[in-house]
Each structure stands twice: as structure tokens, then as C-alpha cells.
Image (cartoon, rainbow, N blue to C red):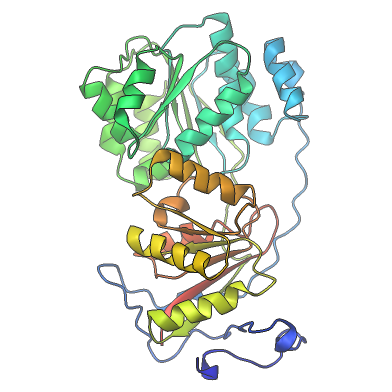
Length: 411
């Protein structure tokens, strides 16, 4: 490894020898017109991967106007909330639950990690307790990871109430999903593609749906699901309650929601303008893949790298890198499209629960996942677009913390 790759002097007044083998990142990504080496993606000037973090402003804690007991929720629900340690509603819960309980259509503008899942699940469970109609709730999410998270939350909130849900997502055993559907669950949570497939096979009937939920609408549109959503919605009864949640309100989001929601729908906005100014971004120059791996292992030994999400371009490359890191005595897992639903769920859980501190992923993990306390995001391979880069690094620097993002570029 050539020492010219890194600035090996003092950094913030500390000697770089504090941690053995720790690379100190160059503070200038400009110069030389470095090629990204990207195949099939757009060229991104490496200077766009460099940014000094601005410390996030201290947010004033939200003061809820209601307690969970004020919404008129069934006592079984409130007991489960107490057991789970829920004390006061978050902003989106506080402002939207009573509208949903009243049967209004609603658009909730809220960022990931603000408690929006509970905001729609609690009133839905309350409605099901009063009228446990099978197949009456349909929830669509952009990714299978998010769909599984929603289902997991439903099971916790509805514990002991004899209400049943099932998940139907792509990349998982369709036979098992068909078997669960035959048990007539009250709630179906799914991704657009697999839902459309099962509806074509007449294995999901939509004539009984009275509550329709679209979670992360903006992400679904980004992923090209607009036609699938429209086709699916056209099959639903016109007399239904529709709930939609999105982090942003773009013209495309407004257009589709104006078609799906009743004209009198309520809008609750608690979304904050998320930027990446509080993420310290830098580049690492490498000659080839061999040197990238050497530098990556050196970086991962830094005590500051506590919990890291590494992004790769291909499914096979991601798995090989995770295997290589494990062989080198790091604790790593991988998540990509070739893994089964159960394998991806276990990998994600092990990372969330800190059983491993490194997760290597394709871009599927950048969409819709709420993973707490990620200290670093490392782009081992450069993303296809700058928008993908923004999604990737947005996994760090959350909850008022400053994050770090590093991107390998060709020397």
C-alpha cells in the first residue's frame, strides 16, 4: 500500500498512530478528473463525494397533546403498548390516529423512523377488534424488508387478539405464501409485484378490502411501481378507507394520491427536510480491487468504525466481500437479492441487534430500512446514480448524530 493514498499527519490535533493501521482520509476529492470506473451508470464527479459535516441542530422534543389512552383504543391494544414501553405518541401518531379512527382518508408526510407504522396499525387493529373481517386490510410497501417490518409490528401490537396477518413478497417461497393466504388472514402485507402475481392467479380477493394502506409512496414511485399501484387500486371497492404515507410530496406523489384518496382527505405533515450536511463525506483512492480490500480492512480496524454498512454493486460481489471479511476475522453479514426471505431477515436482525457490526449490501438495503446507530457508510462500489448515493449514505447520521460516508474511487 502506498502511503500517498492517505494524509498520514495529525488529524484534529490527534496523532494518527493512535489506532494501529488507521487510515486518515484525504480532505480533498478534487483534482485529476478521477474516473469512477462505473459500468452502465452515470459519471459522478468524485468531488460530489466530499463534504465536511455540519453538526445537526438540537431538535426540540415533540410534546404530544394526547396519551395513547386518549384515542379510544381497545384496552388490549393499550396493554400491549404498555408492555412494549410505549409512553407517549410520536408527532405522526399524535396528529393522525384520531383521524384514522374516525374513518377519514389520510396522507401522512413523515420520515422513516418517526413511528408512522404504529400510526396506521393501531387504528387498523382497533377496527379489526370491532369487526374482525378476514382479508379486509391490504398494506403495500416498496421492499420486502419494509413489508416484513410492518408485519412484525402488527404481530406485536395485536398479540393475544386472534388477528392474523401474512406477508407476500417477491424472492420468497410462493407456495408457502399461498398456503398462508388460504388461511384467510385479516391483514395482507405485500410488495406490488408479488401482490399483482397472486391477484392474477385469483389467490387474493380484493372485494372485502375496506382499508388500503400505501407506505413510502415516494419510494414506490421511484422504483417504477406506479402502474402496478393504479391497477391494484382499480380492483378495490370504492367504499374504502385509504391511508398513504410518504417522506416527500412531489408532483408525481400528489398526482397519484389525488386519484386514490377521497377529495376530503386529511393531510398531516411532520416530515423534516433531511439533508446530508451532517454526514462527513470523503473519498479513498485505490488502484484496483485488491488495494480496495486492503484499505477497507485497515479502515474497519479503526475503533471509530463501530457499525458499518458497506455497499457493493452486484449480488455475487457483495457475498464474496462479506465472506472475505469473515475469513479475516471480522463480524460481517450480507443482504442481497439471491438470499431467501428468511436469510435476509436473519441477516438484517443480526445487524440490528449488534450480533455483527458489518453488513455488506446491494442497493436494496438503501430503500425503506430503518437501521439505528450506523456510524459509517462505505461505498465499496460507486452507485449507479447520485440519487442512489444520497439514499445509501442516508443510513448514517440519524437521530441528531453526525455520520461518516466514505467512497472508493479509482486512483
